[in-house]
Image (cartoon, rainbow, N blue to C red; front, side, top):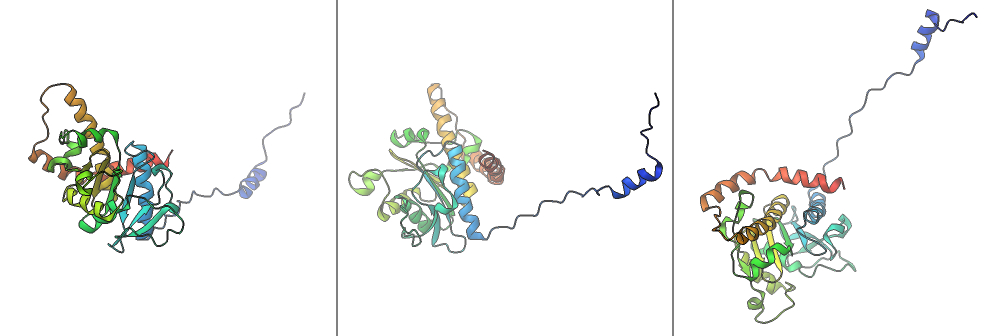
Amino acid sequence: MTHRSLVLPAAAALALIAFAPATVPAQPAPAKKPLDPRAQAIADVVTANHILADQGVVDGFGHVSVRDPTDPNKFFLARSTAPELVTSADVLEHDLDGNAPAAGGAKLCLERFIHAEIYRARPDVNAIVHCHAPDLIPFGATGIALRPLYHMSSFLGGGVPVFEIHKAANGSTDMLVRTPELGKALAKTLGAHPAALMRGHGAVVVGKDVQSAVFRSVYTELNAKLQAQAMTLGAKIIFLDADEAKKSEETNGALVGRSWELWVRKVRDR
């Protein structure tokens, strides 16, 4: 049997090459246009809520705010909704009296006065977290001080005051900071500290920016868990001394963005 050759004549092969589609080099993805400062602040509120939910610092309750970078007398805070469900559409601008003119029919966060009064009292603060993390509750109710047990929580070295709402309100309440007066009292208890516990309620944590506030919130809760574990061992606990806390905080302060980058990746990849 005669087999027909499968080899193309040279001319035909050249013709095929000439008319073959050219390989298009891969084009780099267009760079994302940076958000304007206010839009970025709103995006940060959303991201911070999602990170804190993912890290177990907040659950169906708790909230995060960021000061308006264009107006220090305003801040961004989500309407009353679960942190993990917050979207940019939920974030409203508030003034330092707790008003949100563009809220329409949205239900505002009852404890927005926590944020308003701390921003009023602390010009150095640009982000605030309020949480009900269970590991923090015992330290606000027992008189046992929350102290830095390891280097990641060194920012607690200056002490963590406890807000007593019964004293601030001069009587019983539903434990919520739902008035400007109670917000002022909480801000006074917080003072210059990065965090304060709220007896029978939770905690408030602040930072110079949203990354710092989230970082501190995660490691305040983790420190409480570790301290409670150490206490069950029955031995003397060796906490960070003042100099160790100061030096460690200087190091950690420059590395906050490392944790933020990881946490952002985790919530975006879910």
